Image 1 (spheres, rainbow, N blue to C red):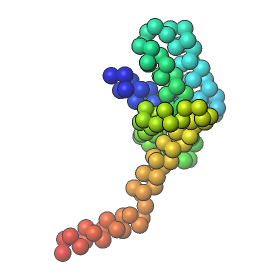
Image 2: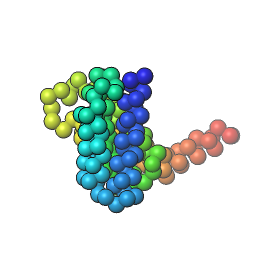
Image 3: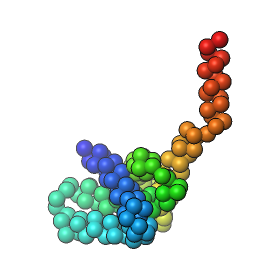
Image 4: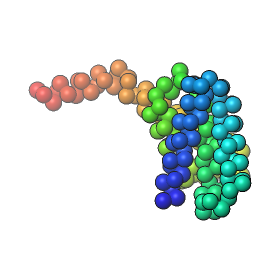
Length: 143
C-alpha cells in the first residue's frame, strides 16, 4: 500500500506542477518551489498522520517529481505523458535510490531520465519510419 501511495504521489506531483507551470503561467521554478513548500510544511507540522516511511519518502518523491512538471508544454504536450513520467520517476526512485546515496542531483537526474523515457516513447510512436515498417509488415502478412 505504501508503494502505491508513492506512485500516486509521483504522478500527482508531476501533473500539479505541470498545470501550475503551463496552464496557470506561474513559471517552472515558482510552480515547483511553491508546491514543494506546501507539501514540506504539511509533513513538518503533521508528521504523525502517515507512517514514518511515508512521512520520510512522500516529500522526497513529491519534490523530485515536481522537476518533471517543470517541463515546457512544447516538449511534453500531453497530461498522459507527464503523468507517465511521474510514474517512471517513482519506479526509478524506489529501485535505484540506494545507488544515488551521497550524490547530489539524484532527484533531478531521475526526473530527467523519466522525461526522456516518456519523450522517446512519444517520438517512437509518432515516427514515420516506424509506421512504414509496421505497414510493410502488415502488408506482407496479408499476402
